[in-house]
Image (cartoon, rainbow, N blue to C red):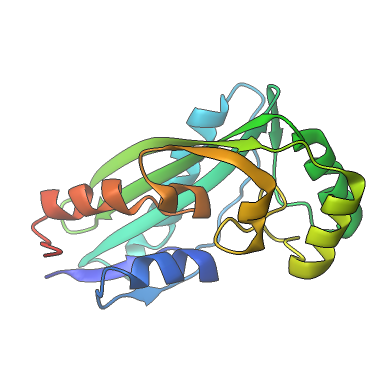
Length: 192
């Protein structure tokens, strides 16, 4: 098997990839993540996923490199990581009773052949109607300020939701394993 590289410093993506019991290295790519005005959210995450993989291509000429990126959309507006309590409180207030769509771009680059497979996987989160007290209690308990949408679905954040909808719950956390497994199999890597 070719060397496997995860082009990410995200502990959440590492934890997801660990489920597959593969040997890999996690390396943080250095790219500009600025979204161009003409890009749709789907184009944006697809471009960043591939860019992250390609940013490591020169350093790993004999590898399969996984790139992934995610954005969230609520009422037509793109939201990202809140970075602070105040921003997270506003994001969850806006999300109350609403549907948020998460788009996760996923790329697998074979650096030996320069072939790259890229896809965008959607996942929908339907929020309960949240009171200010519920939002405050949640934020103080989990402090999800580095998470798009201001929650950790794998933790207490599940209490914020009415329902979840999508093909792969791992996509919500940032690495769609079902699609990644198919991509790896296309490159001759059998998971089971």
